[in-house]
Structure formats: C-alpha cells, structure tokens
Amino acid sequence: MDGAFYGFVVLLFAAVILLIEGLYLWWNSTHGGGAQRIARRLKVMAASTTSKSERISILKQRRFCGHEGWDRRLHRHAFAHKIDKLLVQAGMRWSVAQFLVCSAAALAGGFLLSFYAAMPLALRVAIALACMLLPRALVHRARKRRLIKIEQQLPEAADFIARALRAGHSFNNVLQIVGNELPEPLSGEFRIAREEINYGVPLNEALHNMAARVPLTDLRYLIIAVIIQRDSGGNLAEILGNISQIIRARLKLVAQVRVLSAEGRMSAWVLGALPFGVMGMMMLINPKYISLLWTDPSGVRLLWYAAGMIVAGVFWLRKVIHIRV
Image 1 (cartoon, rainbow, N blue to C red):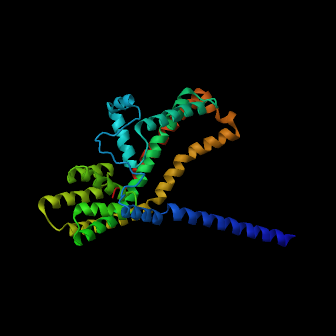
Image 2 (tube, rainbow, N blue to C red):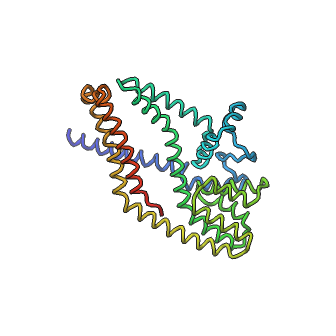
Image 3 (spheres, rainbow, N blue to C red):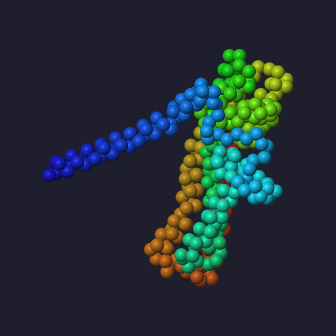
C-alpha cells in the first residue's frame, strides 16, 4: 500500500511538471520572442509591416476620450496632456478618460473598504487617496519597466544601424529595417518614426517625437548624433559605434551600482512595510487593543507623528540609495 501510494505521488509530480513544461512550450511557440519575430517577417513578406496592435495616427492631436464633447473638454486642461504623455511613455493603450475612470473607481472602492472598520475620517480619506493613486503607480511602473527594456536594447540598435549604414542603406531604409528586425518595444518606436516620415513629417521632427515618447538620455545622444551628421556631415556609422560602447559601459556601471545598493533597497522596503504589516496583524489578532490608536486623542496624535516620521524616513532612504549614473 505504501509503495503504491509513493508511486502515485511520484507519477503525479511528474505529470504536473510535464503539464507546466507543455504549457510553457505552447506559450513560447505562440507568444514568445521567436514567434513574434517570425510573425513580423511574414508580415514584411506580405507587404504588411505594421502590426495589428500598433495604432499610428496622422493626426497631430491624440484623442483623450471616445466622446467628442468630453474629448474637447479634456484637451483644454494641462493635466490631461500630462496624463496622455505618461500613458504614451508607458506604452499603454489606455486613454485619458479610461485612466480617470479607473482612478475614480479606485477612490470609491477605497472609501467603501474603509467603512468596514471603525476608523477616523482622516484615515479613511488617506486610504481612499492611496487607492486613487494606485492606477498612476501602475502606469509609472509600466513606464519604468519599458524604459529600462528600451535602454538595454539601445546598444544593439546602435550597432545594427551602424552595420546597415556601412552596408550602403540610407537612413530612412535603416529605420524600416530596425523596426522589422529588432524586438519590442524599441522596434515599435522606430516603426512609428518611419510612418511619421512617410506621412510627410521631417526626419528631425520625427526623431524629436521619438525622444519625447522615450525620455532616455542615451537615446537623445543617438538622435543628436544623427541630426548633427545630417547637418554637418561625418561618419555616422563610426559615431554610432562609439555611442554603443559608451552605452554598454554605462549600463555595466549601473548594474554594479545596483548590486552594491541592493542591501539598502531591501532595508528600505522592510522598514517601510514593517509598521503597516505589524498594524495589520494586530488588527486581525486583537482589534480592540489596536483601535486605541484612532479612538483615543493621544493615539490619533501618535498616528500623525508616526506617519510624518515614516514619510521622512522613506524620502531619506530613497535619497541615500538612489545613485545617479
């Protein structure tokens, strides 16, 4: 009996492992990087270089809302343009109206959740505002990840452009080749620049638009080198090769700094989350004991002092561990 049971456990474990591996192989073969490159090349052969997920508009003004009236109202406000710029840099498909609706829904959800426990009004407002800022935090996180990925792809892109120029291709054709051959998300930015040039936008303006969509210093160096070379001449392939080496050296230094500051970042996360974790556990174990912090005036005063000290400590730790390279 024991042998049969252990055999069943081993076979079940092997079946689960094979199932996970099969799902991974299926996902990689249909949605992986190799499958996407093959799909792009097939589209190129079929004279369809733009992907279905890519939406390029010849209009100078982006739509902020599907409703015409609300779109005009949102275009009058500067904050809507800032939100749209953030969404473009994050590479998200959200419109400004969708972002505002998600923020309002998160605000209402935060208020509803705060009513399940006996809390002071100030704490309920703080929880609701924190929930309202959650969509913005998600967009900032997506923007940061996308910019990091593009920054890691820039040396390969610079070398690719240099090799294509040495082979005799014009810069406009190089933009199309880079947009078709390099992986996302950098290839999508080059395709958008190529499409803008096809619509009649000058090359310098299209490159400046790409720098606005991807606010990276290394990309600005590459774009400035291209613009200066078009105005004054020079060996652009050699310049791009040097820029590629500089970017690789800087990324290597950034990785070393990140390793050396890993302990400080972990300490910041632990110290920042520890008070909230302890408070949450106390609310589950003994809510009557912890409720004195917001039912007693002295407890409320202590909460405000603690909140101020936590905010000051987070900013101080962030300044210590943030090393600009």
